[in-house]
Image (cartoon, rainbow, N blue to C red; front, side, top):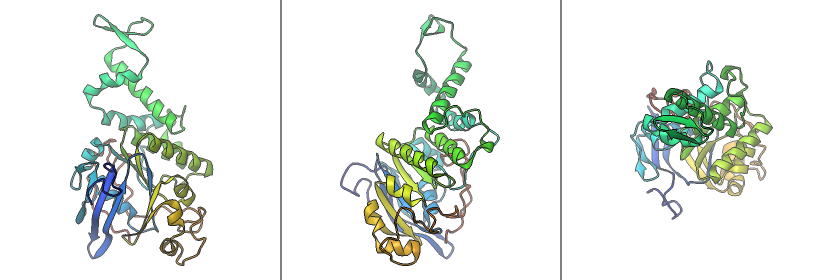
Amino acid sequence: MPPGDADGGGTAALTVSEVAVRFGGVSALNAVTLTVEPGTVTGLIGPNGAGKTTLFNVISGLQVPDRGSVHLFDTDVTTMKPHRRARLGLARTFQRLEIFGTLSASENVQVGLESSVRWWEWQRLRRVLPGTRRRGNQQVGADGSPGSPPAQRTGALTMASCERLLEGVGLAGLGNEQSATMSTGLARMVELARALAIGPKLLLLDEPGSGLDESESKALGDLLSKLAADGMAVLLVEHDMELVMRICDHIYVLDFGDIIAAGSPDAIRGDPMVQAAYLGEASPDAMTPAHATDGTGKADATDGTDGTDGTDGTGGTDGTGAGAEAAEPGPER
């Protein structure tokens, strides 16, 4: 399926076409096809072991498919390295929380921000700071005071950007907190802020609601809806059915490596095959928002066997996907 042909509209942000992955004699994905449009939140749900994390690995470049293709907009990235996909605007968080525990929240975000900006782009990005002008060869502030040395100005730009990103995910004033001391919910927001630091066009989120309480989950949903409203494409793997049904525009259901259903939240909620995949039986009210794979609205974070392929929100150790040459993950069966 060529990019953008899914609904006859413009180019899709992500097009996965007939992707198949096998680990030895085990088939993890079977001819999976899906699209994610700009400005939408797309859900990918399914029981544990369905192949969701394997599919994310294929999309982000950590797993080369045995068959099929992946396109980011018009670019075929099927065999492209993770850091190059990040440069094209793909960011990812992982199922298992992956942050630098010895760093502060702000420093974690700074890793993604600095690695995503080339040195010659800092001059352009200075515009996000309060207005400055030049007096001869000297940089001066808006009040006419002498400017700081270039290294200090760059550091100030970085810190201001980190603070804005943290504020955007609800962590205003927590930039100096050590990440290891944060609750799971707050730490996941740090990971999300780091992913957003590269300014992604496509954001992959692998169970971001895991460990969040009700108010944190609602705040996450509101944030993702806002990101989509601003034009970002979001692909969300999540077991919190209330969150999925509330914010997703379109949902795909993956079961044992196959897409068994796709459609609007209302269509998915009433699909007998989806009900059977989740609860083992077709019940008229099986897919109410309060139900998930374990009947509690949440499932444990055991989908997939990797979840540790990177240490940032973009598929690598430096916030760009670079260095994310991971060992082949095991099957999700």
